[in-house]
Image 1 (cartoon, helix red, strand yellow):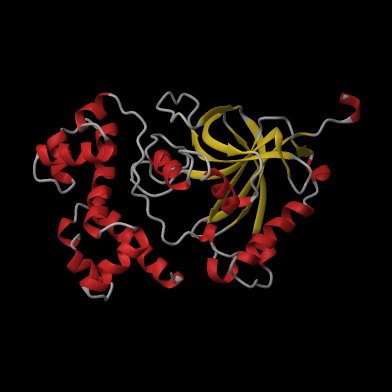
Image 2: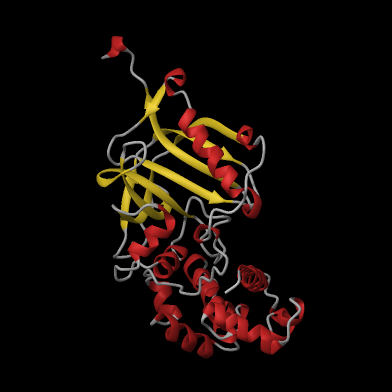
Length: 329
């Protein structure tokens, strides 16, 4: 399957979500979307099913249901209004479709919003799962910013693996555990409310608010700089979060703490990814902690957060603590 087609289908599913958000039902037809992207209906339908594993009409219905689920959870709008706003012609048709996909009626879900897997997250183009890309650009090291922040106490809802190395290996290992494959975990996290890193916090948008992380953990794999870390995937939540916790996930309280941030701004994945990665690694490797008055905090339970979004930034966030002077020891 070509990377070019993966990108094209990604544009199409992004367009579908935009039309649902804008209530632009007229544009959500196979004919119009095929024309917009320059294909015949037959070719468009065949490639969409080949990449997504679903018929276009089934995918569209499931995305509408995913958006409607958030409306049921987060607003007091009537079930009928939500149904009509999301392309269903009656309360009965909406209830039937909702129960078929989620196993309960809209009213039952509203009364008790248990974690459900949206199962319509479609990421045809995921740069995490491709080769590093890019060949490097002169002077890119100077674009890495370094600064210290204090992150307030919060909660981290996640799964973790003590043996994996990197995103690809993490999901390969998790897929061997029932209910912890990438599709299930990402679709469950997509339905969790109040994520701190969610873009806007209201859209039924794939992966919004979801991040990789590493936890200082004595049972974890020893990383390249000699620290035992467990690799995690999850979402940051407010400290007062008391919402649903899927049974296969862990909810950890992360105390307030100081962190050092290594950040690079937006970049082009195809031409700059390798260079940015090298620059980030070099910046972290060469940073003079002794001159800053801080040192890495290796206390068990402290978190390393990792953000990779080429349209916004690449960030490593490492836990630190004030370095104690000899007179204080």
